[in-house]
Image (tube, rainbow, N blue to C red; front, side):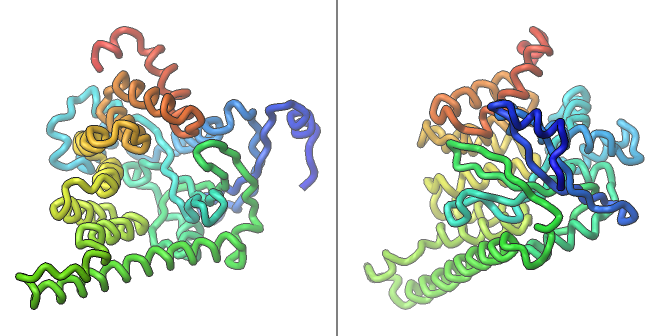
Length: 351
């Protein structure tokens, strides 16, 4: 694809960023498109996400605001009882982007990941299935149903550096290298989960005949709490939030001091929009480890979900003090600070 004059001019700037991504509309009569995004290094993280938000915001579906609020309330279940009408209106009207990691960035991938960006309100809006996006996810080993328009992109993030990278229509091939990497990643997760379950069974078998002994041979084996946590991780990777919640809770019943399980349960609560529970778990983690950046970021998200913007800002700023180059904290602050400033004193008072 030839470089346009506009692209060439932007590339000449020191902080210019140009990358390609793919758009997959839910309407199969529309073609899949390879698109180019132009931004600057200083706005590399959020400018792309904000553009996707604008697209999803336009795809409101056929529901009225009142219907969307009712659907959002139904989705929250019993937790909606403590949400007032103003907060419910704000939450149901807040457009976000849900990233699905088809290939999670990790040390094994050079911290490069491939992500499918979806409308986080697809179920509330009752958006139609996207069969082509669903097929791509399944090709990568993720058996999920995707609804509404989606976008596919690639980026590198090692928590110090962040770089958006090209993802083209050629990458949609089942023979693409990232697809093989994704399948291997899922296979490793399943293998670890299978090993964990086998170890748990062996532990239980060993403990039954020797309940009164102090046998030390099982000490090196995976503990029942860690085995439950591993099953929770597997369920989370598959997008089965309820199963993940049950396993992380089981892990914590066996070992209430398991910080990783509590942190993971907090993230699961966020997926289920159980913001108060998520914030409580994060606070417990931070009580044991005040420098846990993941817990700070997750508690900030919980505060945002509860409409507690000032508390969210405080957690994000603390995360940046601990990790000044943290891309997620910087991106969320760049959005939240102007929003809180624009809201004025009333927002601060309501927080």
